[in-house]
Image (cartoon, rainbow, N blue to C red; front, side):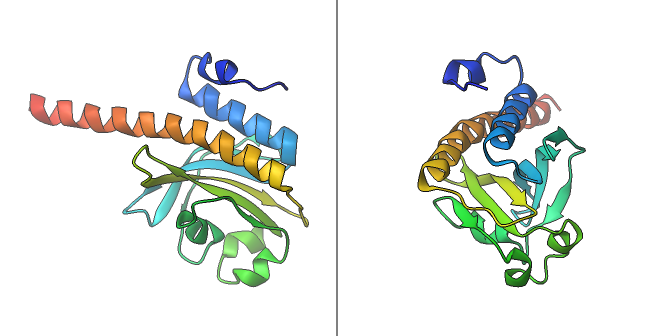
Length: 167
């Protein structure tokens, strides 16, 4: 699958853009789980806006961040990559055990003012090695996905404001 900015932005919906991002990520890395999520509840939890298992769309999920690699990645400015032994490093994260996850690749999605607004994550059920070039690609894709998520959050906030003003 060839990727270009015009391909991403010519899609008719955010959902289609998120799905394209998941498809591109799956094609490149083959993660067991891949998600794009927004922070909710004072940034203590994540609600997915797109989620796939073995490259197939799955129902969205909500999960707590405490004690997870996503929580640590939230404060990072770059791509967080853990090649193996993830369950040992995050023993309190039950989801990693349930899904038998061993490796992690994640990046924080940020608003234009650099405020963390979400996360893009790959979870691997085996040891994974991600090159610097692939981390750069993942980071670049996250900028597009982050801009899309930021736009959606801004529109939702404006709609709430308009509704409040109309009351």
